[in-house]
Every structure is written in structure tokens, then in C-alpha cells.
Image (cartoon, rainbow, N blue to C red):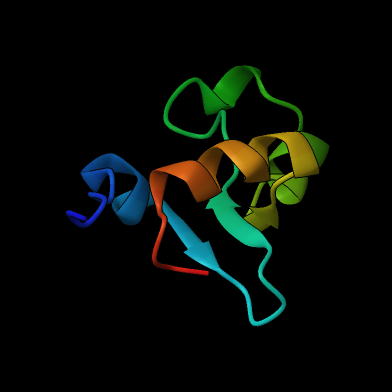
Length: 66
């Protein structure tokens, strides 16, 4: 049986925690910060844990990183 391939885009964007959850960067911070509220910018800093539905999709893209 051939090996499954990992999606290159997924391995660049997501990492896994020790418990198997998926970490990702927060969306909406590339440009247009002048119109964002200070609260939004503060809350969007760093990374976040994906919800269960999105986590399931990412785990299909990265079959060997669990």
C-alpha cells in the first residue's frame, strides 16, 4: 500500500499540540488594521486552537502528524 501524502499547504500552516488538537494562526491580521478595533487586534494575537469540525479536516490533510 503506498503512503498517503501530506498536503504541503497544511504542514506550513498548522501544528499539533501534545493532546492532538490543531494550532493555527488567527485570521484577519494581514492588512487593514486601521479599521480593526484594539480589542480585535489584541484577541487575534498569537495562535488559536481550531474547533472540532475544522480539526477533523486538517487531520485528513496531515495523516502522519497525530
